[in-house]
Length: 272
Image 1 (cartoon, rainbow, N blue to C red):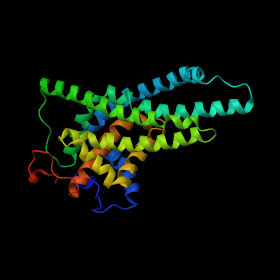
Image 2: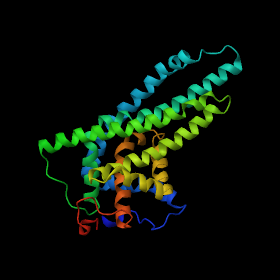
Image 3: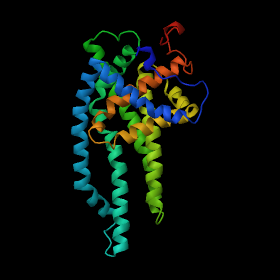
Image 4: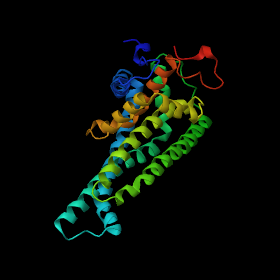
């Protein structure tokens, strides 16, 4: 398989099957990581940190989530009240675990996200990244953390807006779980597509445009990452796989000429 063939062939026009192509980007990302030694080593480092973070999140939720719920809703004594209370605890815990998985590992691994994206572009036939310098590393570290914090704010803000759904008797918590999951999937697509686009100095308006115009494709990517989080062992690799998949999507959008060349870059510098 040539480096060029690793990039997805994106249809010029949106179609429903784009959703499955978006999910399939994770398979492409796994294959590329296994073929490229540098990507594999960097991904293994990310996986070790991510695994520790995910285990820590499970412990925190197991230890503190029941008490947190009891502080706002005392545990009922009736069997049906306890069933409702437990349902809210489980559904909220599942979504909070996904949110935590998208908060803690990205913050811990912010310095490695740009190198992963750069190696992916290089493995797909792009030019080598810039040479390492201490100043460049520090600048990339600060920029990565600031951008990650900003994107995490939008994730948490969106979920907070949906919280009042819990007040609807019966179906409120189920509705919150479904809508929060869909919002998180969309956010994931934007998060990992924004990684290479931010590095190439695209404004975030361009990321929003892709999320809007290629909704099925982006939602497929987000849904694939969301599902990956629930697969034991493989979920330790979710962050590097998501970054590589987002970079492949960026390359596919460039190949299809759905994205203009990065600001300041000549049109001849597009991915080939």
